[in-house]
Image (cartoon, rainbow, N blue to C red; front, side):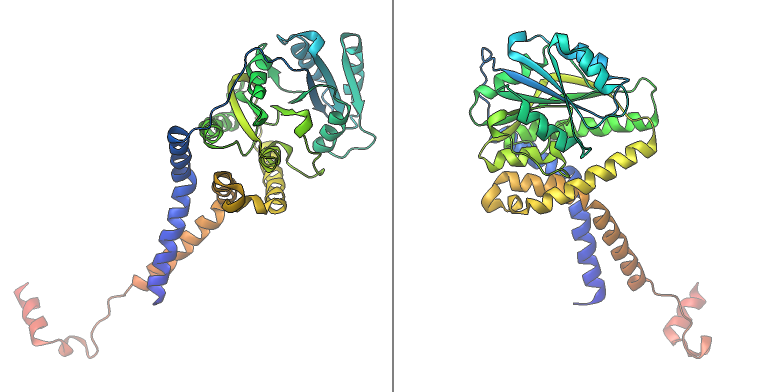
Length: 344
């Protein structure tokens, strides 16, 4: 096989990988969801006890509004508890949480700062609800969010339910507009993945898990990604409930958005490696296809782009043939060539 042929094969394979990642996979998972859907046996009368866990680190600006919003949820108060898990906050976060104590809010302060996932693990140990709902201090819920999510748990195969995050951008910043556009694309894929098999990730500000199915995660884990895999490992599934809506402001600054994305990608690569066995279709079935397609290949896009560019350079070099004058100049031209020149 020549260099040119090899470069051409590499080019088309890389281009195909890019096309599949952003267009082919969404079409595939939508087709599976359409022709082989896994439905959820909802029961609107199912009202389990719920523990809402709000993880917070220095959230004095937003916590009071968040607690008021949570206490106003349309759900029986005797079946609802609220826990604020403070990750060693150094501002008024703990003070604000304590001020809601008479209204039933419990504060758990971590003995040392170990991150969001560790705070969640500790809060779950204290939770008394059959279902644990995880939230952020900056997220506001629609009043019916619990009544929309919880009937899905009447299906014994459902271990996790994710709600729909709607980004708002009062400042109309370019970063915010980009985040909203990207999230619309992701939401389309979430709907299809939920119906086809299981979600591969959830919005960290609005998802609920069966208390009995929750597995304590290592501190470095990206909990809102790996929680779905933990469900599938137990022969359960994570499903998407679009009727459960929450809102959150987008990042307005490019540097903050970049830091957040880098952190999430780094954590996700670690999670994928630790759970690489789930990317084997013989074990994970179609969920393995989802993991490889949606996560692994998405994060390998820079590699595909670089390989495509390198193959393009190789092909351009191989096919570029500079025009050279025949040896001996015009005198060395053949009679036929000379006749064609004279005719011109």
